Image (cartoon, rainbow, N blue to C red; front, side):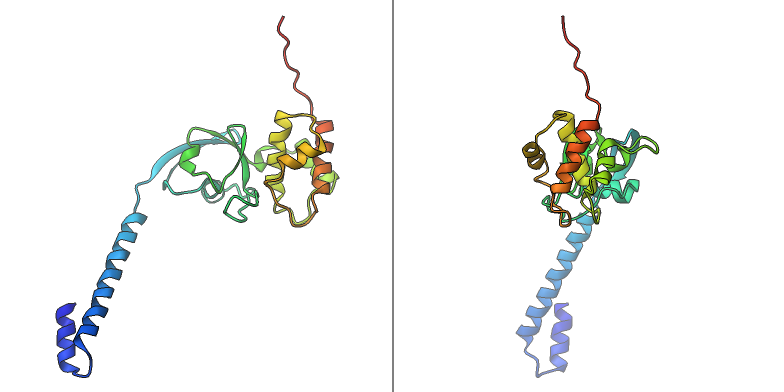
Length: 206
């Protein structure tokens, strides 16, 4: 490149050779960066096996692939929504090993060997889950974009605390944003579901 620059400068005396060499050096540097970027893109894939809604899914994925993209783009479960991608809105919330997580902050390789529950896995065949019914009955959704994440976050709450207070419900959902309902109907829906969900009786030791 530098020889070409010198040759081009010789036939174009009005151009400063030092300036041309500096520009050529920058171009070479850009090429090096592009080559390094290409090498980073060609990262070896990792095999992951994740049990999603009771079904085992094994795929070869890039280590940088987020769980939310694995669910939506690889497995095809688009009920998990992508909102802010910064862990603020909670639209991507799913259950991972019985814990509500924001799947835009979890890598698919981190979920390897784990169990994931998405909104598609809550209903039993054609029968809605009590939480899904409650959001319908209590008008806990409008556009519905935040609803899957809200329901999964509420699902974790009711698993741990079958009869939460309104304050506890609001605290459990404070990581999920809704821009439509004003939250009161969502709180009403969780309370409605809590009254109708069967309680798991704890076995008493004698």
